[in-house]
Length: 146
Image (cartoon, rainbow, N blue to C red; front, side):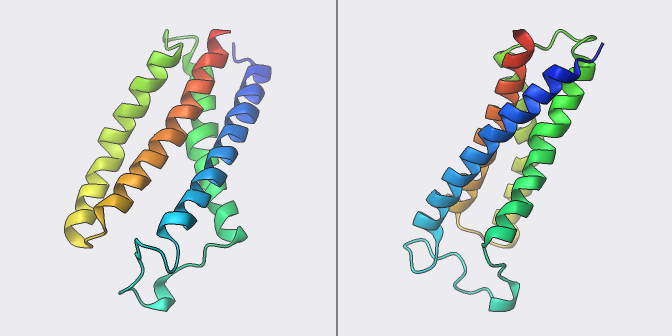
């Protein structure tokens, strides 16, 4: 049976983790990749195509990540927990690495070839997604082992 109390705990704790990590990574991104910084990413891109990184952008990005990194894994974990013995941090690490390798790496490789984004920025994006997704799934897996 699905425990709604455990799902709510997973949503709250993983959501708080995702919020803290997103705020920290946004500060790091502004520090290293912002305007007038060493790694200028938007030099050759027209101003009309660049989205401003304000509060609305952060909230939209956080809600998308909350949906894909917290809500969907929490609900699917609660349904499959009864059937599959996927519990603990090892299962979360395996799921994160599989998702990253199967989903994000092909996209990044095509962006490197077609658009020629700087490699250090794409590595930063991959690492930030791995930290967010891995931390959220580790928290969910840990809460289900309690």
